[in-house]
Image (cartoon, rainbow, N blue to C red; front, side):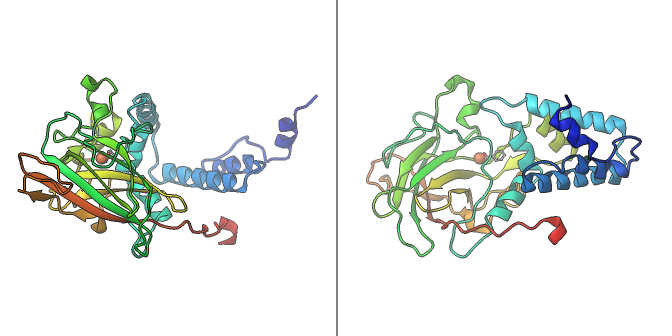
Length: 313
Ligand code: BEZ
Ligand code: FE
C-alpha cells in the first residue's frame, strides 16, 4: 500500500533535471502541503534568500564546504555553559535586528537589548541589599533601581535578574575554579515602592569569547571582540512584557563599537565614584565605591500586528 506521503508527492512537480534557477521553486513547492501557513511562509522566504545568496556570490564548492565545517564547529562548541550560535547571531547583528523589530523604542518604555550567552536560568534569589560578588575581588559597586509602568506607577514584587562580568572581564561560567558555582548574578524582588538594590563589584569592558569559530570570523573580518562595560537585567512583572536589557558605562572606550551592536543611548549611564565610606543603604565600607541607578519602565503587552503573506503584500 502506498503511504500518504507517496500520494502527496505524485501531485507535486518533478524534482528531476532542475537547473540552478529552477531548483528554488521546486524546493518551495515540496513544502506546500505543510499544515502551518507561518511555517510555509518562513521556510519559503528562507529558501529564496539562501538560494539568492548562493547565486549572488556564485558560491564555490570549497566555500560551501568551508561554511558547513564552520557551522558544524559552531554547534560542536556549544555546551551547557557556552552558546556559540547565540554569539554568532549577536556578532552578525541578527540578535539586535530581531530585538529591535520585536521591541521598537517606544516613549518612556525602557529599551531592550541582546540577551547574550551568559544568562543562567537557575540564578539564586537574594534579599535586597545582598552582595552578589560573594568574595570575588573588585571595586565595590552599589546597584539600585526602580521598576514602574510607562506612567511611572511603581511595580511591587517585580522579579529583577541581574548578571555581569568581573573586573577581569570574565563571567562566573568562564572561571573553572568556581566549578559551576554562581557569582556576580542574583535575582531580587522589588519592594512596595518598586525599588531594588544590591552590592557587587564594578565590571569592565571585555571580549566576547574568541577561542571558537566566532573568534575566527571576527579575526578574518578584522573586527575587535570587545563589549563596553555593562550590567545585564531581565525583569518580569505580572501583566507586563519581559524586559531584557543592560546598562552601559558612560565613557567606555567601546561604547561606539560594541562587538554585538547592543548599545542604545538611553541605556548609557554614569558609573559614579563615591568617596563616602557609607553606602546608600547605610552599610559601612572603609573604601570608596561606585554607584549605578536606573529607573526601568515596563511595557504592557500589545497585540501583534497581523503578519502579511508575501502574496498579499
Ligand atoms: C554579553 O553581554 O554577555 C554578551 C552578549 C553577546 C555576546 C557575548 C556576550
Ligand atoms: Fe555581558
